[in-house]
Image (tube, rainbow, N blue to C red; front, side, top):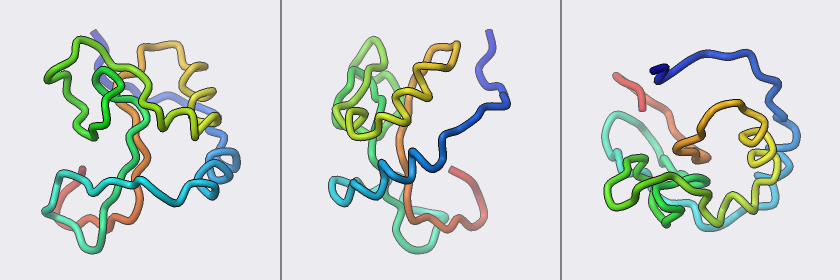
Length: 103
């Protein structure tokens, strides 16, 4: 079973940036409160059961589904739909400067 892979993808950056410019609310603080300076906020796009959670683990759900936020990012929805694999968790992240580790 392949868990992670690196693939060459044409990511629609300008379309994603346009979607982002229209969004100014409902960013959630990241659950990791260590190893970074500043703020670290996320917007869930695909979550366990489509719930309002930023935890990417199937704790109380049996599958990943689109969160209502995915409707605000049609460019991301189109991009993920074009991938030929199962999409589990997806989220937008903003405002992090890491030190001494990675997310």
